[in-house]
Image (cartoon, rainbow, N blue to C red; front, side, top):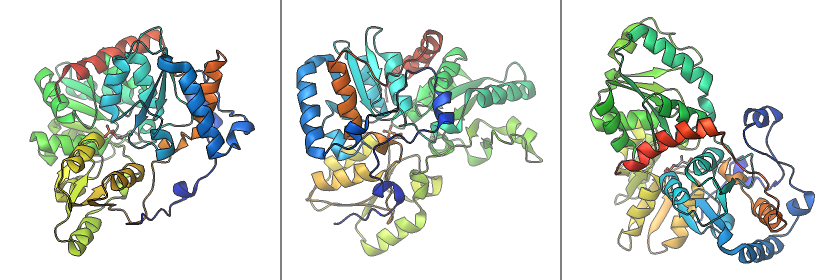
Length: 395
Ligand code: 13P
């Protein structure tokens, strides 16, 4: 089936940097260099292919390339390993022989890889403009303000455990480490929530409201015991104080723009057209979408379901298009399509282009490290505690 790609991001052919000076200034912990030479930006696909292959061969095991499932095909073909954010974090922690980890994903993933890898290893994000709009929806100042307001109202025995989704800056992971909290990904969120309620009475979950709600409901917390925290106007509602008293989970108001595009109407339409279809969605989708689906889970889970399905299976999938498209190509015996008719790639994942890969790899050959992501020692110490609490849990 032909996949319709009509949104602006899928038409984007630009290689040159998209990062604004304001965003750049926010990430001053990393050595960033967005100025890809025009020479690389204008190179043909064949030439880039040749150069990337040659540079990788020359660097051998000194370089490990990790690719998130949302990366485009032209990038994923170079990945030594592909994975969801959980698997990639595990891999970054378990490959000490590589001097350089080239992370084809987004900034928060590269930061986590830096925190979990050895001191001798350098993590590189080929294009430093590859951020995550959801991760940017929570910052440390707002989270600390929220924490203080909750403690002021609930008192010393509030028993709040902070849980940050992997899609967050390293200083938010460090906040969790310092305050008895933990990190979760979409593949282990239920186990993490279970852990959190064994440590305390309440959970502050950021920055994805939807993953938090879906996981809370699955754990058995009713909707009335979850409140949404809007950092721009936290106590706006008249009964905000009662909501805080009642809340077992405080959900940060943040979302993934790609997953917000999916709706119950799309599911109904798919079922009306193909009565034997199975609907498979990511837990960053709204709750009504998850509730209407047959199955839901992380990108790795989505792949796994399709890989073990029999020939002739039909799937309507709600996640990022590069992954859905690749699944359709890799399983021609099944019928697989994206539920959103105007499919849209994750625009920030899409910023990793082969030109950036060629640029950073050839720089390594010349002994230069470009676009290293490095987390300062104190932040890394506490973020590692929160990440290791997560890695120690079974899924
Ligand atoms: P997973 O790969 O963990 O499912 O998460 C997807 C995602 O949100 C990437 O930003």
